[in-house]
Image (cartoon, helix red, strand yellow):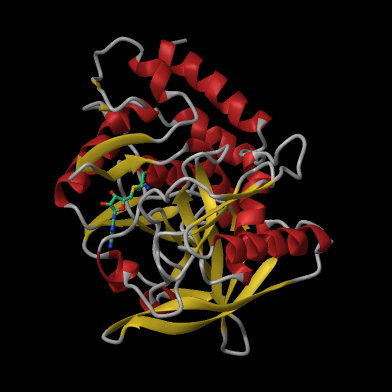
Amino acid sequence: MSASQRLRRRYVDGLRREGAITRPEVAGAFAAVPREVFVADGFHGRDGTWVPADGDGFLESVYTNDVLVTKIRDGRPVSSSSQPSLMAAMIEGLELRPGTRVLEVGAGTGYNAALMAAVGARVTSIDVQADVLGRARAALARCGAAGVLLHEGDGYDGYAAGAPYDRVIVTVGVAGASPRWLEQLAPDGFVLVPLRHAGHHPVLRVRREPDGVVHAAGVCPAGFMSAAGPLSAPYPSAHPLPVDPLPAATVARPARFDPPLDVFRYHDLWFAVGAWDGRATFAQLAGAPSESGCALLDETGVGGAGIAPDGSIHATGAHAGAYSERAAALLDRWVTSGEPAVPAWRAAMALDGDPDRPIWVPRGWHLTPQP
Ligand SMILES: C[S@@+](CC[C@H](N)C(=O)[O-])C[C@H]1O[C@@H](n2cnc3c(N)ncnc32)[C@H](O)[C@@H]1O
């Protein structure tokens, strides 16, 4: 057994243990596709330094549950191989069968497309960057992946020539879903998309219901880089975008959760705060225990209140007192609502954004009874 196969076996076991992989065919795909082939030129390590393919620890780093950033422009990541546990959760969420027709927006390295093809899907994958697509094409050829067609273009347009698709999977963060994806879906198809919500990109399942209304349902928390072009268009009722660090807190409320919420439950709380309050976003707050996370941004844009995973609240700016109370009321509401998780939420969607290239965005989230 090669070093790659040995590390891959441990990697798949780890993803199974944490519950990201439950289906045998998905485990089989992760065990069969060599991730290193898709980052053959290397990647940016956690500390930002370049990890070349012949560098120390390259293979060990490839088989961790980490994002591998493959391209940075102007100091921001613009392409990567996404976090494996997130890829696994999304692939499982697609409920793929042999022959399922999938449109992927955001080909990136091509690894996710190869995984879906290994489950038996017929994949069309789009990326807006020609050089990224060139490397993905070479990688897919090197590992002999069959059943993947790559296309260069803006994912907003989908790829009508390959329609209809049973599934659309979007692997880049967007502000809203493209109408083209819904037009190119087969009846009963659905879209899995990381859609901007309160400063991060939880994954939603979007479909047109038999009554004609487009609906979104929460699937899982996630973090993704933002898409280029009309998919990231601003619209009036959107939450504020993440801001520069806020000044040190002047008002604080004590911790409520001991131990603090783990990362998943914290994101459940964050989703709820975003569903109930249009001022919720991601912010860094000097002096708060977690330094960054969910915050309500005040109208000045330089103040507001952050909510930490331990439930403590740290507020700053001219309206610190009022925002600290508002954050505390939202925290109470989440607790008294039974601490709902991301999949408990539903919203009808409406068209917004650029009138020439509109996007479907959620309008008014509500809770649904959970089993
Ligand atoms: C996180 S990476 C995708 C990861 C990929 N699925 C993989 O397995 O490696 C996001 C990709 O989305 C692409 N992208 C950004 N905006 C886009 C757009 N409007 N249309 C299509 N692709 C886009 C980027 O070029 C980048 O390669």
